[in-house]
Image 1 (cartoon, rainbow, N blue to C red):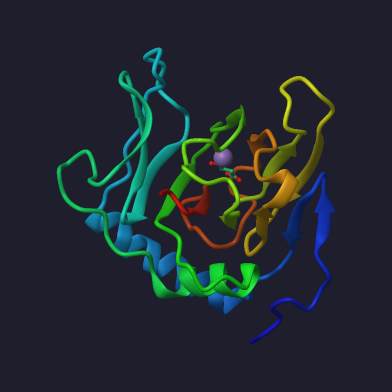
Image 2: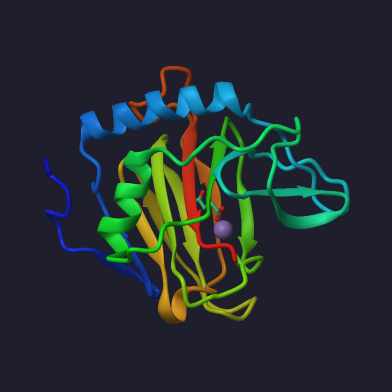
Length: 206
Ligand code: SIN
Ligand code: MN
């Protein structure tokens, strides 16, 4: 169990944040699994439906991957290469089950990579069929400045630096909270020798 769950979670506008959920060996093991995953399903740079390249690179694991291109935001059964997505690593599924208490497994593990200067604008996760399932987010590598608002665009927001090993849950009234990453501190994290931040988001899709 290591240091998992030792500290009570923070409430960031309804989003539950477990700081230091993964201890150092668990983070290192997860990074090694994700390297293997990225060999099977290489990172790609999505473009928005308006054709703007995103600053974040993405890949995924599970029954579905989330993709964006000129045709819009959606879930797809296959990587853009045509290959099926690799399975969600068991260590990632274990985090989902422990933190949510659910027996249902997630369908998608989206893997976001934030290199130097990458960010993600405020958005809602709303491409899924049933918002009663939570979204679980796992941060690795560099610190990322996470911003959370309410369920209406333009309202007040709160921010918190997510660090390697932190786990956040968007559930209940915060399931549709606007959220994003304003910036990361490049090379602040210990886990990725080449620098960068990885965020995993686990979701039930259909
Ligand atoms: C996302 O909302 O897809 C990513 C959130 C994060 O990187 O912390
Ligand atoms: Mn999101």
